[in-house]
Length: 331
Image (cartoon, rainbow, N blue to C red; front, side, top):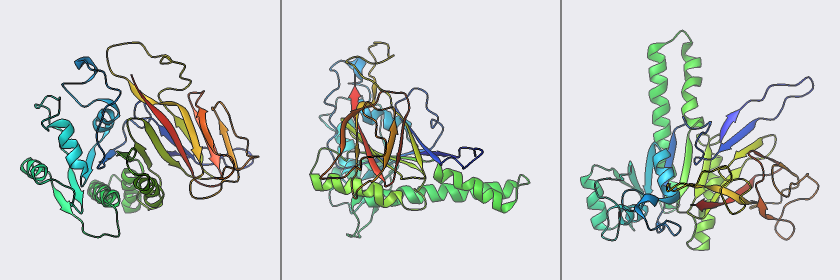
């Protein structure tokens, strides 16, 4: 989530605003941010993909994964995620044009799921394959470790460059400038849905765990599948602003021209899930059924499911972290 400071009023300062702009928007304020993609060991199935080449089949990846791949700077396959990418892009059952290679920047995990022929293929293509044996961590955690290492290396490179150029700002200012790399990076997780429920919960738990680490604390971190999108909203004093591709969907794309090109985006059905603890106060705008802070969200009580995004910008403030989830649409 991109962070911005809102100026002070005559009384008290406004809260910090964390902004989530969908990567599927044609114009996004985060379009210049660095982005990382983690591919998990889940089948890559484009169930909503059209059968014609104009919808992506035969030449390139389709659906949600295509946009996330193209939007990303650094791509990580978590162990068996490399098998899934291989099967979808170069395997014998793949329908993609073999002249286009989809090569991750690294494959990591305990590598117990990585097939020998897949390992050999990516090794020959120069993809680093790094084994992390610690069984106290899931493969998704190990993928986050790779992303963290990459982000910190960029920070160091940027700091060194700033120090050498000096620019008259001094070392402290250069250090602050370098930290912008980490805090402006977006991380997408693809493949966290559709498998075992305990694995899905493990992926959601990773949003909480890694979202609290210094490098990721102020970044955008979202989990995507072909049918769902989920991300964690920080609690007050943060104010969350969310922009998705398809607000107020009524059977046809709002303000979207009908073309032969595949169009992908989130919305409009959404939910606010108090996963982990009760959320005493939630304030929203831009939803069909807004919350005014009077009724807590909690399991055994109210859970805001099957809600709907009605405005271009949704705002959410909550006393505890919340999971925000939307459906994905591929047309």
